[in-house]
Amino acid sequence: MMRIKLLATPAIIILLFSLGFSLRRHPAHPPIENTSIWQNYEQYKEPAIQHRMVKHADMQPLITKHVSSGLLRSSVIGSSVQGRDIHHLIAGEGKIKVLLWSQMHGDESTATMAMFDIFNFLAAKDDNDRFRQLLKEKLELHFVPMVNPDGAEVWKRRNAMDIDINRDARSLTTPEARLLMKVADDIKPRFGFNLHDQNILYSVGSSAKPATISFLAPAYNHTREMNEVRQDAARLIVVMNHTLQKLIPDQVAKYSDAHEPRGFGDTFQKKGISTVLIESGGYQKDTQKQYIRKLNFYALLSALHAIASNGYENENVEEYFAIPDNGRSLFNLVVRNAEINNENLRYRTSLGINYSTTVNVSERRFNYRGVIEELGDMQNNYGYDEVDAGSLVSLPGKVITMTKTEWEKLSLESEAQLLKQGYLYIRFSDQRSPTGPLQNRLLNLVNGASTGARPPGLYQYPNFILAPPEGRPKYAVVNGFLVDLSKEIRPLPNTYGY
Ligand SMILES: [Zn+2]
Image (cartoon, rainbow, N blue to C red; front, side):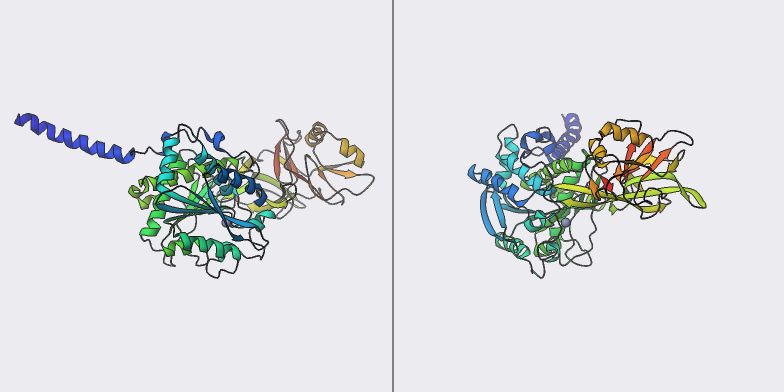
């Protein structure tokens, strides 16, 4: 008997220990990874929002839909400078208040799209009912989507007064900032989510990976101290980081925590609202940010679940500090070992090409213009696209002359054939050609005589051919876009009329 007891005691201790451990890891409410929410996303994705240039008018029917279904309580809390309604939407009947707001920068819409996916998720009935019921029972969710509708209308960061709303939390000069502050002061949320987009050229530390999502638990003072309020924000970030690492390994970073007393995140943290900043960055081949939208949807739900189930409380704040910082190692395109042949100088070096973006608001279209922004040693830089031109020579593109009518009738296949012969430009024989972005094309248009003859150089427009010595062109770089001439050739986002 004694002998058995001696043996049993450690066994019981181990059993209790492992039970406790598994309870911690698998609480009564299973984590989001044990649900089918990711797999079922297409059922929740709001089909009315397809383009990331989402506007205020797009939201109205969707809000109406969710108010009439009974999911959301909605009130118009005021209006923007130009008179657009700003909505405060509430879901759930729980005790813990959470405030989420998006797009205070008008050209940062990824989380706005995700919010409407979250509404559809909350409104659905399926095998994830237990998950959504927990959120609705424990949380009172307050959403302010698109804090800056005037900026969104013309796709710009600032509001119609040209003030950055996220630098207006202290002065409260803009009506939009005053409204957001009033919501927070009225409801006194326990948690806040400040939802933004960042430059897609941010990398995870000095790595080649884009910072697809960057987090921050904003500092409430210049010495960047941690208190319970900020630690809880950091713990929520640890939860979301665990969730995201399984989907986008090593593509999560941490935003700079320099204290910004004019920012909402910093100000709310100081007020005692545990506030998380989420910055949506870039992801390979996701110019419309639809995959990042899905990641936002999923990460936000994982955080809300952690709040509702108290799952975040066990997380280790040190894991937050271990997330790599945002870096700037990325370019849109890196051409390694490019040959520069500039009058008497001939050398090989690397080129870093980035795109500046302009917006056609009425057509909801982005236009790009490539520029060579770096030239030199780029061993510690990486591109979303990369090519090693070490065995190739760089050639200026040739110019072909035709009438405007001939150009209009030119098929994509014919343009591809011209590209393969080393042509990068078309000049009209009968009139001046249009300038600016050109849609559904492979070749640029040119009026002046000199364009096209220049070798690749710093701050020049990146248009050149890469070919083996004495061989047929292998790659073309057109307006900064890399075209592999051995593969199927598709129209470029846009070429350019010079
Ligand atoms: Zn922003």
